[in-house]
Length: 80
Length: 157
Image (cartoon, rainbow over all chains, first blue to last red; front, side, top):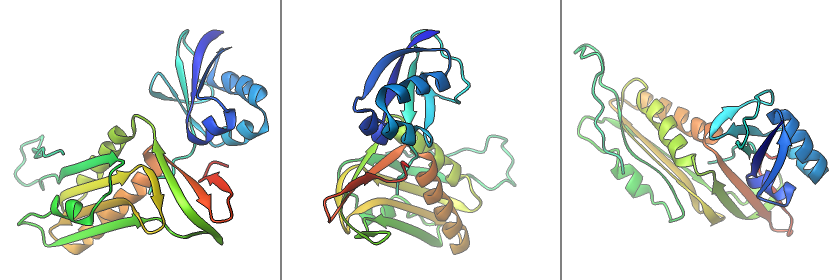
């Protein structure tokens, strides 16, 4: 388990009700399960469509988390 | 403003030179068509395709009052990346793209992309590819406020 910082953007930030928090998890998927448990259905629905960055690099739900990592939660892009 | 003339990495004179990305930015200030158009004009261009994305007053039957665009700190880097990819498409000479963030009302311009090429087909194709890539690959988000007072994040669930 690693202690990481999770940063929520756009719809994920709105659903979580906070921009950033700390939690402990071994993978991105485990971190998001904890986040969904903490923040409820609104965030769970958004997380299904999100992509993730670990320390600025693309990651999947299986990606292991290094200690002190910053995990960013990016909802689907909607420019244009 | 970027103005880096691409060079041919292989030095092969038969290879078509790559197009040049002259402008790629994300900003809160208003975007004009003229500045993007001006960034792709050049004597070797025979056709310019210009796309402007504007705020529509309707989303699937609901009246839209306002769109609030926001972006991730990496968005401008990603915009430049997709623009450079489009600039390398066949026939492209010059390419420019601006995207706005902040609060936009109905009718305001959210994005302008322009591609100058030797011939119109290449300009249309590259401009289409560029705008599609901007929509799908650049971490931009929009939050819409409807005329009935409700609101939602576009595409979030």
